[in-house]
Length: 218
Ligand code: C5P
Image (cartoon, rainbow, N blue to C red):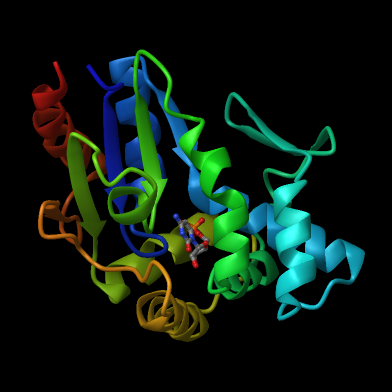
């Protein structure tokens, strides 16, 4: 029997990271934050001065990425970059490098290798469509742009960081646009994915919905 995979795809700041982490913990599964991989490529490129449109150089970086996950920490060359990859520069950079086919190809097998027993919760844009098309459970987790910008705003304020609602909303829409319009692995709901709109839901309610879907894995 193939190793169970629960694929959660959706737009930026939809809350899928939080939901995926909680569901993975409840099921005792591994959690793959695939967006973090694209963010690490962007960070490495920014640090090394590699242009964000140099596809061959970026694919080289992605193929030899000295990155790993340790609990909820993200390490690059052994250095904790968990916060650094969440910066606005890395968010924008990730969505740019993710549009390049050679970069996606370089990360393909690395992502597939996360499928090990007892199971995996994979989270991103193309978990159910490209990386794990045979995932037993697929969920498209979304929320309105306003709800997502609002959550991001509160997170930033909580961390004591500067935040501007109009800028956040504009950046989110731009990223949605780039993620949905690109030729390779565009962001969209698969026919066989369950739709979960969390605009008016608490995290707990979203987790309950996903856990009910995950009952199919047992
Ligand atoms: O999910 P997160 O916002 O961390 O992802 C950062 C960027 O990486 C996204 O804007 C998207 O362009 C890209 N991404 C992707 N495919 C994935 C995960 C993320 O293209 N599976």
